[in-house]
Image 1: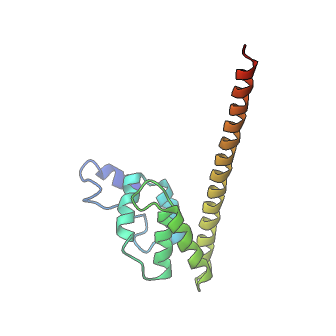
Image 2: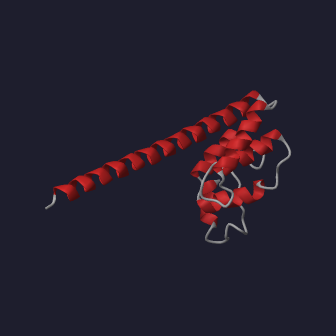
Image 3: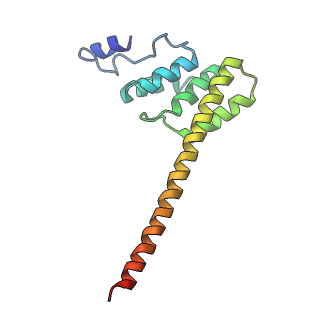
Length: 141
């Protein structure tokens, strides 16, 4: 389906032919996540536009939060996605949907921790560089 859509791009823009993941609008959230991760930014934008107004069932909220957690579209908001996923995992939810929400939440949390570590390491490196500069300046006559 995705290949067919890409072939059709020569005849129609994505605005004329909105991208939907293979399997239609009622696709399982885990499949939506997999396909959205592989989609182009334009395809993600099209999917976001189709999902952003849907906010009724827990499954629709999960789809929206999953897509919000993926970059390269106007709805990307990892903080909002994390908040929504945290709310979903404490609500009554089908076991498969809860598992998908928990999995993505763990991935987002791990990514956030990694970013914090990188920021801390950069800060430490900058401190070491400053110390070396100070030592070099002192050793010059």
